[in-house]
Image 1 (cartoon, rainbow, N blue to C red):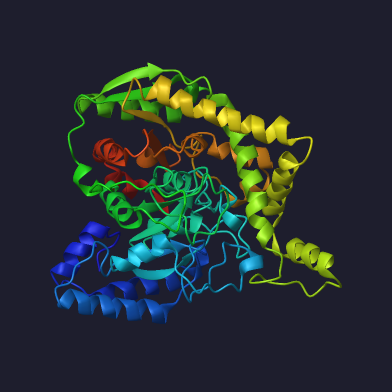
Image 2 (image 1 turned 90 degrees about the horizontal axis):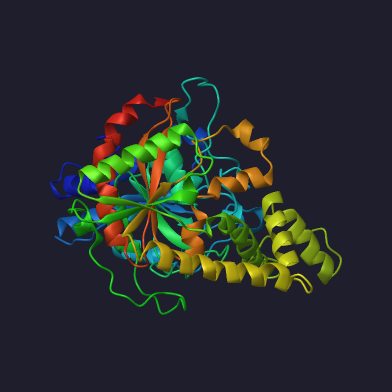
Length: 493
């Protein structure tokens, strides 16, 4: 079986009968078992996966088609999957088995996908390193050249999905992005990760962190695969009141199209405090786009410094509200150490939630409380509107897309993460939260390696519902970077 196969390659191989979906699925199941120490998966249902693969083979044999037919896909463990445990990486949901299917996963099933397992994640998607999971941290296979002994994080919160794809334990995966949880792991892992416009993908059946910010998004090996995956998971859903009732274009047709004449914005404020490596990376990406016929324009977004503070008020506020439902009464794990209703709530939530989740619940409850609502939450909402207006009036009235960093640096070690303060950890999201706050689409594309031999990504942010345009420009960066060749220089454990 060919290593590091893409969706496009697997579809071609299945069509030509070079291998079957059953053989492909078995191959990845064996690799998951072989590399179990990466802790990429929380739940793997081999029997169900192989049964689905056999069904896909029957459909292929009878001439049926589907853009994901027979393709082994990993699913972040906050998408409810009927009959398969869905934990959101939390102890409080460690025994939860949904009786319904999320719209995003149902869309993939309708297109013939074979779900190979549920991936590890930061608890309730709250984290930037996949270290807050009740099921333990997740690891990258990559190593630093200077110290190969250090085990590196894949980023978060979709770290398990990133590790699964980067380690070739599946062909592609779906994650979620509330403040960068698809794009940041993509950058750390040398993958393509896109967060679509808010409302392009349904949130129904997706365990909520911050409802006004959450969006599903794919993690893939190529831009073309990201377009194929987004084609599958996107679409209007009447069960989600925030779902955008728009026509979904054929994203794959945009990949490889000319970008000549497009204007790409470079944001002055995003350059503050960047490492020389990241500055050089952006410079190379800029040059590639100029050579492809783009014009680059320097501009200023004055609201940039306020984005991260606003995010860490709005997101915890919504989290405190969303997580109030987990009280041990209905479907969550229940503490045995209670004497009355109040102690049931207290003990269940104390035992069931991890430290980071508790921190964000407390923060959110505080900013929503009487006396502080106006000072914090209402003010953050006003800043959010200013940020949206800034993008609309000062960016996308002048340029087609923005070229910005994805992350401040490369992947860091598990031990190093334990020494970071919460604020230092939150700063990993400084370049990604803007797209969530403004409801805009953003993609991270692998563009080079650091001096230590670790992947580095650049990010493109576009106007609402302009994912097709993003795929056009992203494919230029992908081809120019030649990351497939660069990957040979990464140290793999």
